[in-house]
Length: 189
Picture: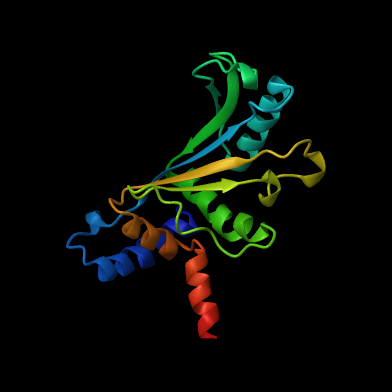
């Protein structure tokens, strides 16, 4: 069974991008390849306890067990040792990726306090988009009374687009509320 976002991609986004960018073949249309959710707890006083909490939160948000990330080198000022587990990440593909994006766009982003849209400048030059989330409480799956510490996440959306313009039009068609698009509509009113 397809998710609503994937159905929207097939029925509306592909024809819109073909018309906008003039692709000759439907297979040239960019698509979302994967979503990587990453967090680090290296600055927490009790790293092991914070890491366990972060892994539980990531598993709840993504629906998939996270993998631990380890420190590549020792930094004495941050009390890090090489090989020490300091974070967790999840890579989502396929159905779980579309389910996460659907929840992220429609439920989590609007719950951010004073939300005016996401920055259109967070592309990396190769068509990938990264967004920082300061607090896990924006996700509806998280129970607010069980939060012990705020855990920030980086959400990286990897697309098959070759340019930032193609990736931006893909994400805008999928429903990402870019702040520049919101300014244009509010000025016109």
